[in-house]
Every structure is written in structure tokens, then in C-alpha cells.
Image 1 (tube, rainbow, N blue to C red):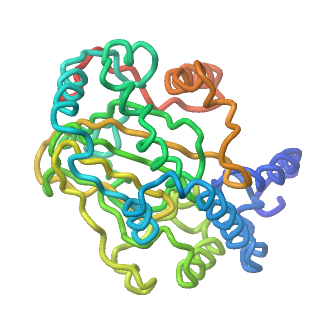
Image 2 (cartoon, rainbow, N blue to C red):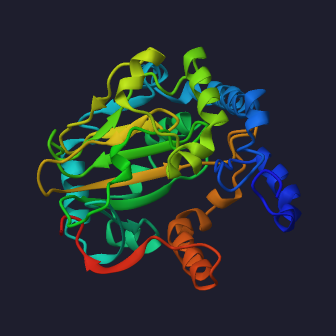
Image 3 (cartoon, rainbow, N blue to C red):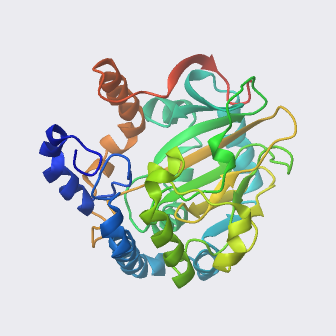
Length: 344
């Protein structure tokens, strides 16, 4: 055995090494990332710092296209919250078109919560004509690009969160966590109201910054990562609310917000889904971007070129279906039939 790996597994070592120059985050899948001796010497933190330095450079080049108020809110907090994002009449039309549209869905259950999605592609855009002007809008695209530090086309879904389902398993999304070691984006345009007892998004303001205290925490976690919980080992580090003050951070902000609120976050910051005290359903337009963090440039993303950019979300499902059938990678998103976004 070498570092817990059989000799036969070390033929993959060149691939583990090459992965250091990508967004690969799973300590469990890469013994170089998980190496105690390397991480004691600062390997994980050095990789994190380089990714953030490159992201800062990309954001500087994207900043001029973003209104100052939004930019300053993000730079300070790691999130942007914009209420009444769309004009009332435009939002009402979009809301009606999406919520009344019955589509084939996929879903994934974690604990007592079901997340259900419909990928936004050419078919949905044709059925919901008020959607394209939203995601093609220059202000929308500029804000998402700034937060993501890339002009890569986001993956878009109409997403439904259904809480209160029977389950004996815990919901891992209720624990505060960072998605990965580098800046990346998630965004929500809420199509329904979200009250404080309906499992709202929560986010720790300022936790997107690689401060000395955060870097020291990352160093400690990386050294002993393989004795940690499963999801932290997969690269999504968990943190308790009690630890936040030691990092100079406040308690999480809870986004109990009305419909037509846009929230955009950097998922290097600590975030979670708030707990729900009763069965609930909420619907949203959801966006996601995570690109190789070691690229110095913000654009030139081949997968964003049309028509591929609009097909990617659906293609991703199909590729994962194929990999699942081949026994290479498990598909967690299973067909759930035709539903409307507000259906349980």
C-alpha cells in the first residue's frame, strides 16, 4: 500500500497530477489533493490562493459592465440581492408562463427535501417566450459574469424545492458549506414568495473572501480532511455556525424574500438551505456556473457558443444517463414525470 492506495491504482498518478490544474476538488478521489504532508506545507492553500488571484483579475476586467451598487454589494458580502428585479408586468407574465407550463422533470431527494428541475433549452424557451429576454439581458449577464468571474454561459433550470417528504436521512444542504475551493456562481430568480419558515437560502456575508483566518481554517481542514465527513472529503467543506465567529464572520443572512427577487452568490462563501418547519413548495429560475479556475481569461468558452450553450443542461443529463448505464458515474437525477413547477 502507498498512502492508502494499492500499487495497482497508481497508474492514475499522472491524471491526479494533471487535475491540479483544473477545478478538481475531491480529496477522496485524488491522493495528491488529500496528502497530509503536502497540505501541511500549504499545497491546498496555495492552490486556493492562486485560483482567487486569477478570479480577482478576471473580475477587474468585467467590473465596468456592472452597476456600482451591485458590484459593491457583492464585493462586501459575496452576494447580491435585488428585489423587484423585473418590472411588475414583465415578471407577472414570466411567472404565469413558467408556473402554468407542464414539462418533463427530473428530481433528486436529499433528506426530506426533493429538488426538481427542468433544463432551460430551446424547447422551454419556445414555450416560455418571456424567458429569453431575461437571460439575454445585458445587465443580467454582466452581473452573473462578474460574480462567476467568467462570461461562460450559465446552466439554467426551472427549479422546484419541495420540503417535508418522508425520510430517515439528514439533508446535507442544511449544513453550512462552501461548494468548492474557488469562486463560482449560483443564482435564483424566485418565482414564488419565500418565507422564513420555508427553508430559505442562507449565506454568511463576507465568507467569500480568502482572509488570513479563512486560509488558516482551510489549512487545518485540508491536513485532516480524510477523517472528516463524506461531503467535506468530496471537496465541499462543512462548517458549524459556532465556528464562524472564530473566522471573524457573522451568523448567516436568511433570504426570506418576495417573488421577483434575484439573489446571486459566490459559492466559495458559506451557504446552506434553511430549515423548514412545515411542508412547502417554492419555484425559481436557477443558474449555475463553475469553470476551470486557473484560466487567466474570462471568455473563450467553447461550450457557451450557440446552439450548444442552450443545449448543455439537457445534454448533461443525457451524458450522465449514459455514464450511469456504463457503470462509470452514478446519475442522481431521475425522471419524475410531467409536472408544473408549483406541484408537490
